[in-house]
Image (cartoon, rainbow, N blue to C red; front, side, top):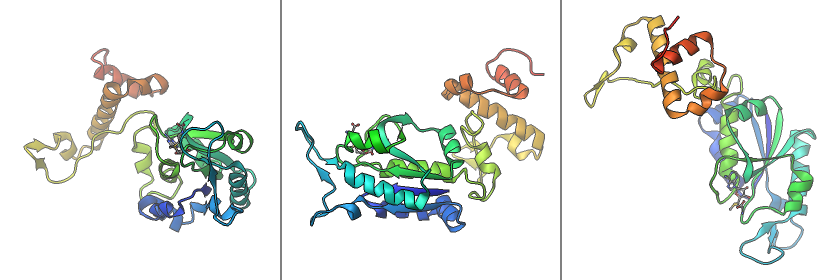
Length: 246
Ligand code: SAM
């Protein structure tokens, strides 16, 4: 996957060279090219922003400079790469969006700063606007990092164990089950017996029941959108305290 990132702070993306994203880059599953709009500023001071028309606080990133940065990003990520502006006003990013994006091959993520970017840049150059949540960050860089990390985990070959993404929360539309490791007793709390039983089928059933119980208790909204297997349906009914398991 080839990503272009338009950012005034390319150093922040050094964080990608750690852990799973670092491995995806090393294995050439993921390539991230940072483009600094400042390189496309035309004046002596390399100005990228200006005061807002109509007055008011803060500064606004200039459209022509961002447009040049997008051109440079497209030269690397390909002319068909979608231009995505990170914005608190965008569509809320989730697992399904990440899964769809990794199949596109190329994307350009535009990180705003200050009050944001000139609206005409969004209207003419941006294909999609994405938000990572209902709060305002100081810049799009951390939002871009969140999106890149979520996508990198889904690239085939990025994880040590391919099964681990499939068991993660949201992958199959439900939350993950709880995990335990040594010691066997911690703060008076023992590991559930079934996990020590060596009975793989009993462990699988217990984990499924735990995952569904958590989803039901914590995120019932997910269950409204997820098509459950007949087994999951039966276990969920047990969790809800009604119906017999088939
Ligand atoms: N004035 C803008 C507003 O209220 O819609 C917020 C500007 S914010 C201080 C600066 C930049 O951070 C934005 O241009 C955007 O790129 C990024 N940003 C802030 N919150 C974000 C969020 N929740 N998701 C994605 N990007 C965000």
